[in-house]
Image 1: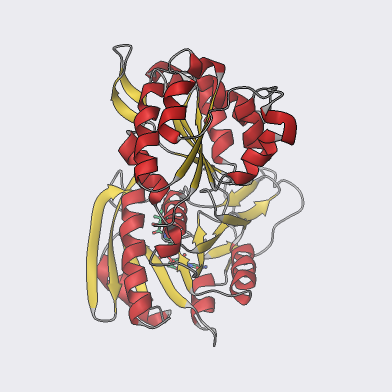
Image 2: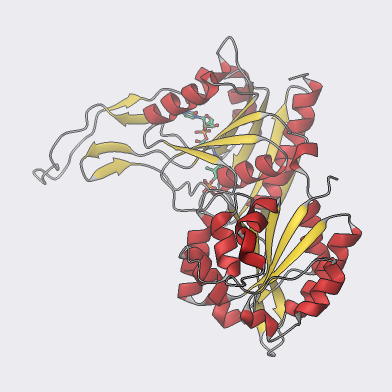
Length: 400
Ligand code: PMT
């Protein structure tokens, strides 16, 4: 594990007392730590504690003439390999989401190019509040920012629920996580996700219930495993995982074009989790179709198959497909794997309520030429983590 230069921001909340243990553990793990405290934080814990633990002066003010004689805040922003804000209060989260720079910590967050991780800590009602959640969504759309926690449980005010800061040891585990040692380190990975929309007229389309959650969880897991990840995504309403590049595709034809262009630029592993419409209307009329008779029929034509096209390339990457089935799952999935010339296929039985399409959880069986493994039921994040580990094993075995 490489020693890092950690800039720890502490904001005003009772969980600030845990930040002392966090500094101690970070120093023990060999990291350099510099601490910046907001005025709110100083009401809970003293700079002296953090100076003693970090062995560095603690900064509290943006307009400190002595520290700023050499543009101290810019020097500090450039020094950091990783910024961690723990605890991050609702107020700090709101100011960060707005891009404010009205104290030293928010200014550093604007000035740094290092990744910023925030560990929220607040009362469960404050965490659940619409405005806090809106700010969190804004931050999740920012690829520089990563959300660590919060945890659930008993709170200092007596409430129970989400809003507890992750424990210092958990935060150290996340800081120590070294992508460069992950099983997909250095690999170019392309993942398709979400539905496609095939236009009928300017206001209507054919689509399906895919939310993109499975594919986005896979992208996050592949990124955590060290890969450079491009998500080719249909229209969805969920945030792009930190560090992942997204290319938007609305129709099946867009999906093929964007995927092929991404593969042209270099790809070691292609995973197709998108629910691509097999057919599209033969024509998309320019004006909204009017009600005229009691029945109408649409003429549909076959869409291009992105997965099969990528797998058939001379320079095909290691290609993994999904198969969403409602019956005879193993039979149809393995048939698809052979017909589309895939290395592996993830069979998804989408007939069980609460699993598969547009849900938080899933259960899958992965097939390859001479084996299989069932994963779940579990959260899509857990399924994605195991899938990535399994695919990485096979990728290595294939010498790709
Ligand atoms: O998005 P979520 O709500 O999280 O739901 C996840 C999921 C159920 C969509 C996902 O787990 C899943 O099963 N994805 C595959 C859905 C699908 O369209 O399966 P299929 O059996 O029709 O297609 C087989 C494979 O060919 C898939 O990898 C698909 O991406 C690919 N394909 C299909 C048609 C086409 N024109 N182009 C393709 O690339």
